[in-house]
Structure formats: C-alpha cells, structure tokens
Image 1 (cartoon, rainbow, N blue to C red):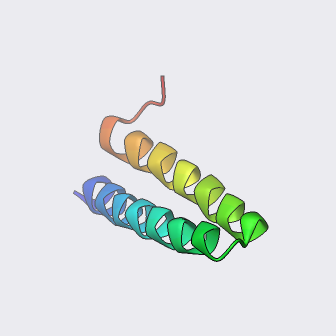
Image 2: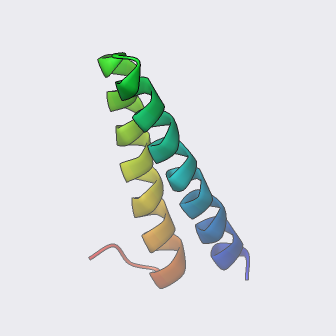
Length: 56
C-alpha cells in the first residue's frame, strides 16, 4: 500500500514538472526547463519502480 501511494505521488510530481518545464521553455529559460524535464524523468522512473518493484 505504501509503495502504491509513493508511486502515485511521484507520478503527480512528474506531471507537475512537465507543466513547469513547458512554462520555463516558453519564457526561454532553457536550463531551468531542462532541469525540470530531468526531474520529471527521474520521477517517472521512481513511479515505475514503486508500482512494479523492478525497473526493467
């Protein structure tokens, strides 16, 4: 149960990071947008690991 809640939370953080990265790219803040996209990728990997227990 705890792993599923952690997976859901990291999935929501991933969505938030993608939205914020889009706003940063629109304002031509390329570095900030890239950091948020990297964070979104990390969050989706953590979410997959929490739901399934394995990465690959």
